[in-house]
Image (cartoon, rainbow, N blue to C red; front, side, top):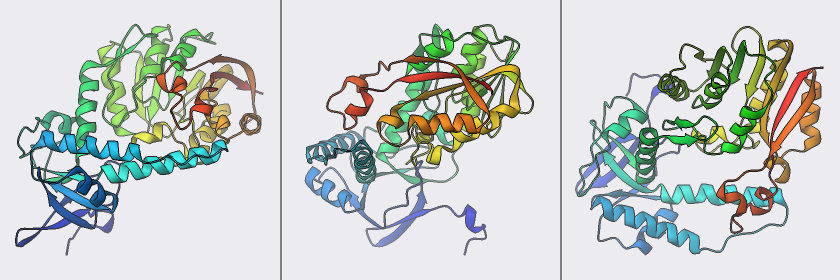
Length: 379
């Protein structure tokens, strides 16, 4: 019996291999439970058999060639895409069906599993070196574990993004996102921050800073001191690293806080998750905000933290309105109930590929999406 408190007991995957019963720590960034049934899979397993087993919730612990496992995963993706997609007329129903399909897809594709050693190596033919990617995402290794191939590919992709960076037109330079920290790939909302008239240049708060991109943009615009907050430890490290790369650490302080730092500021900026729904993984917290918790928290706390004649900038897409998840009237009521008024609103349309992709399940809503910067003041 483990002496660890129940809250610290790590999930374990158990399987039979040869004549032995084996077990190993289970790793899942999205927090899914380990599969109850596991079979050993290798290069002899057909894509049809793998897809059938994975669809039933059976884990496939891979013992073959790594590159063949990647090809098998792609074959499973193709089988998912061949299935007819359920449709709905009402936007809210279409969104719920889309989320259900995403969840089922993630569960099925997450059944192709890899064993990783304590030093983050893969004992498979043609396996890549994932040690640096794992160290960046998980920290120093201590025990071997089993993880999905999908998560490994995510680690590798995040490592490449972190290494090469993402070009930010509004900054004129790159931001380097960390694993688990949402990448600022949608530049239109950053341009709103770059264009909005500053109420003051002495101090600003950036609430939920993520990569630190908005804090950097405010400092670049001439704000003398910026305090950026986030709850997530990866985001804190990521923001500090990016601000160091941009030589802005003397003007931007990054602290771990739930929304607001102590004190008041003449400018407080927040870009909360845009869709009031439950996230399915850690990184989705940047997109989905259950019951609009962060949005409500920002609005309700803004009045107490704004300096006299100060402004709060709320950066928010209206996609939730087109999905019938929140109405414009509800948003305006939230603003009014918080003792705030709208000074002005700057609007822009998204330019990302999904906005014009007619095959996207949510195309009807995405094609009408507008992102706004709401300039708010104490009423």
